[in-house]
Image 1 (spheres, rainbow, N blue to C red):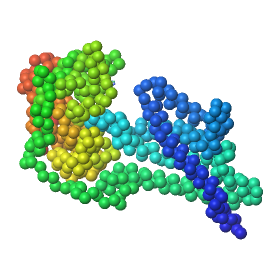
Image 2: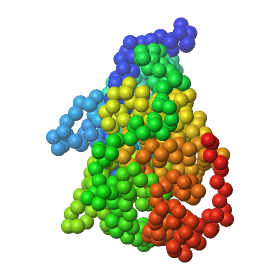
Image 3: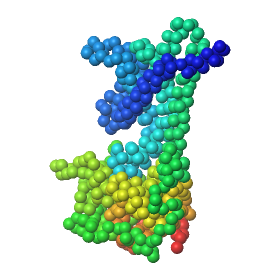
Image 4: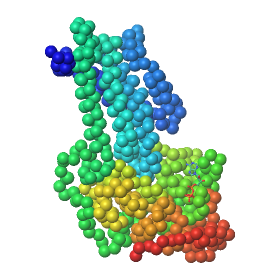
Length: 533
Ligand SMILES: Nc1ncnc2c1ncn2[C@@H]1O[C@H](COP(=O)(O)OP(=O)(O)OP(=O)(O)O)[C@@H](O)[C@H]1O
């Protein structure tokens, strides 16, 4: 018998495959348990609470810093002294899981940190809670960074199961050594075992490839939004394909108007305001960014907030939506606090902020669009209606296609954000914000990140919203646009409202010297592109 034939006979040996099956079971169980524990540890490492962070850090430090072999021996030999006795197999599963958790935690944390934090902010602004955001937005994006390292870890673990022989787990390497102990045929026996390991690790590499393909957003988009692993499934009957014609009312304004909640559905403060900010203060470190801002918006009003860079305009929007908490003062939207309760006259943030935001109906459009990069344009729009407001998929998709038509992007439903221009991304972001049927829309410099030739298309959509009667606060440097669409201009400087009033007054006839200086500086630099008709 040649050496090759002999090695192949060991490769097919039932005795060795029984050991391999044990190694597979230990690795598979340790992978599942270790991943679950690793996810928990990764989240603990990123907790805002220092003791929680320290606990996770200590666990990871200890498990990574001590040899697996000693950990197994400790569980097997030392724990019985305190009455905890496990058989060899259970000890191996516990030991490998605990060890795997430490490594998986850091791999998962690295993946999560690789996702732009603004993705989570955007999800939060749509009323998505932390768990939903993690599951739908952060982890799917993080998985692309996590998967290759995780596959490495799984392969290492499968091979490392040989260490378990120290606690008498009769796995593959252990069995190969037993055969060699009897016939001294080192080369052929270990070659047969090596071929088994090679086959098993090839399966892991294959699974990695399939999962990576399944999570590739480009391939998903081409498969109509379904994971590539399910690509043989036919699209559901009745689901319109890309570029499907959607019938809209005669004008975009009419179409938007049909989406805006009726006036009677909008609750207001006793003074008739939909939004009311009262003496709001906010600091970062020693810097008072907002210094007692009082400000209100009536239903259907369009308010443009202008002012120098760094004056606190974006901060004000983030406070209104409770993406950040106020230090002092109070904010009510629709007559209620958004994720606060009043304790001894002070606003105390409560849990369930995302839910409160969704109930009140405040949507936000960001300077950098912040579309979910793992989802197509259509999925970006349907995400919050389906997952936060429980709208059935068909209804949510019909609305999303209608909104895409409103913003002039009917043919782009299955495009990923990275395949859209900046102006198109921002129009999808506006459609996404509209999909939750908001009562108030906040625009945070929506055209600042756009090339000049793309500004007009976004302003044109915003103009339609204003004409349709949407209540809006627009932080903008587009002074001419602000003058045309806003009912009121608020000039902000150094964290205070310097002056406010109708555009004709604030822009053409400012009362305050600071406003005049700002406007003349803007006039010198202004280069407003023409809007498409
Ligand atoms: N999370 C934060 N931590 C620390 N400082 C912050 C934070 N957010 C904002 N700031 C600071 O607060 C000040 C106001 O920022 P904000 O973004 O509200 O200004 P802005 O008027 O919107 O400016 P711009 O027009 O340039 O966007 C800035 O000095 C900024 O550096």
